[in-house]
Length: 278
Image 1 (cartoon, one colour):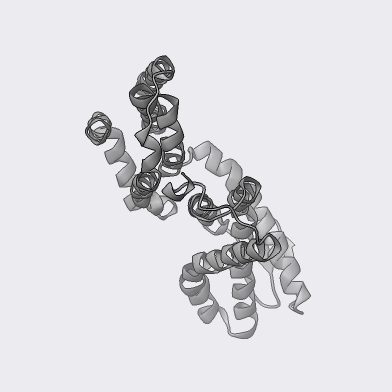
Image 2 (cartoon, helix red, strand yellow):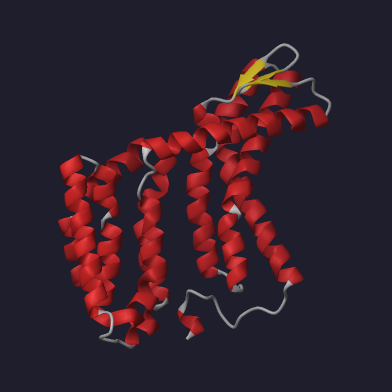
């Protein structure tokens, strides 16, 4: 399996190199380097499932490989590199089906699905998500500033304070936070002991938690503008607050997991996506 996976990676050397360049140059997707490593870790944790093989998935595996190959050919013809890289995912799933049937797909599907997070969002999709995130962040931050007594008004994506204005630009929309934190919540759902519905809630929590962390960041920056001056505020906004967003979001996620453990103390015997399940 390892040899064939490495052979598949070699066939995708070009797309993977292009992905690595984007991971290196775009902070929004710097977590991409960790995605294949964590996918491999998931395979290792569930390795006991691979002890059983079936032959019932041979032809579905062939069809998935053909679909992935067709997807790649279409991406090359249309000069769409993201689809070229994304075609690796159905090819990987087809490879597991081809080798070990449905039992091996049961073993590998969390790792294969996690590979989605290594592919950057298409520009059109990122733009569609970024604009609503900017508006939500602006409105919520303005309301929070008003709640704590700061005279703030929102005009588009600009927050007007007493003597200053804060522009919630596209880079501050929280999209970077949302993309990276979605991968983190999926990883957490794979590792914790929880019921299926709890895992779904954990994955979906990436959206409200990511937005909350970004709103807190903008609100703290507004308070700094109001009471400490623009120089201190700019440093907080661009440096300290940005660094603290992810630890804050992880802290909120940890609080959610703790709440689940208190409200629903009867846990499954082991993590759903680990060898302890079998």
